[in-house]
Image 1: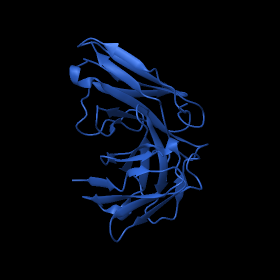
Image 2: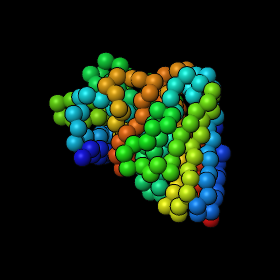
Image 3: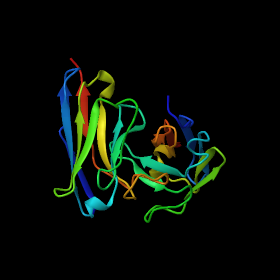
Image 4: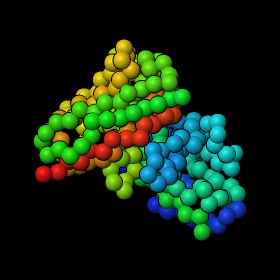
Length: 110
Length: 123
């Protein structure tokens, strides 16, 4: 059972806009920033959004993050086939005194 | 270029020990918190442990507290994870990951990851 809750799957067609949600509590998302990781098959996770809405260099601006209260979202606009991957949200948890991850959302581009 | 290369994984029987290593290069190693993060087959990542730049602050997930010990050698640019009393549920790919800060911070995130080393605990 993951500390942060994500839907197990999401899908969209090329060009569409897709949103992935991440739900937490006051001890994690409610009081700390949220990060999002993309994991392609057979590779290590890669940070795609940090500090709620910041994109590292090299990440397309089609990716955006937001946070409200104890929930966060990752939005992908102009969906492309290369976006098909697993996406994980993460946030520091004050109760755990360490980072907590969501269970992951598998994004399929139809 | 930041590089993190893990080693030391393998097949081990329940109750036995294993020591993982992570060789770091391409950045000033002693400027950053370093972490171990694991991922069981078909599951999401799980933070295991982290150590601040000078080893003054160390944290562990409840699932490994008392069994695992993290350490670092800043002179050699190495991160270690000593794993004792291994259990079947410790089976996972273990990643070494670099933080963005020198001390534990609520805004921490894993900016760089190694390729992982596989630990399989089975009789």
